[in-house]
Length: 194
Image 1 (tube, rainbow, N blue to C red):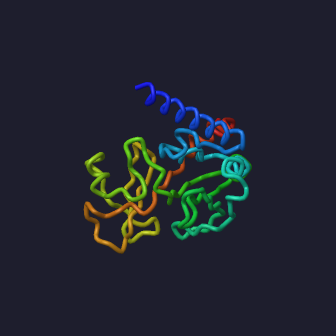
Image 2 (cartoon, rainbow, N blue to C red):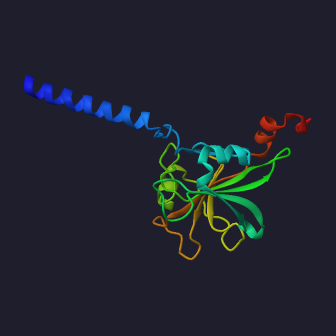
Image 3 (spheres, one colour):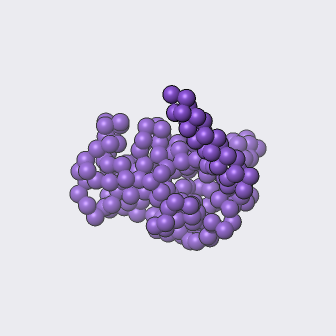
């Protein structure tokens, strides 16, 4: 028994030393909610943030300026790379002028680690969504917006591949955090609402 406790104690000391070592080296541990999808945000990235704020969170080395052609509309955007996701940008953040500077207007999420508090995200099925939101319907088929399920309670769009039939097994290919224009203006430039 004493030998088991001694072995357990040594393991705990080694694990603590490793954690202290990582912290001392400046390794960042993502905040608990860094991959939570909710109204107006994808993890630490929030609708309304300025380009400078987005660069600060992602790290300039992980951000690339691009042009988005979402819904047949060209708009400046930022592709955000994240460690652990290698099949393209984890996020694409579409930009617009908010008060004066460019800021996040729409966030496209491609990284399946981002999830709602009830577990929905890239890779979820249409059946998963319908179990949680029984009235959910696929809309936007054959439109510039593309096939998606908009859940207004969450402020999120779950996008599907329009080339497939929509069955309960159809998978979400990306999730979009939709604009929150009035909330952003109220926070960023309240005098504009007067």
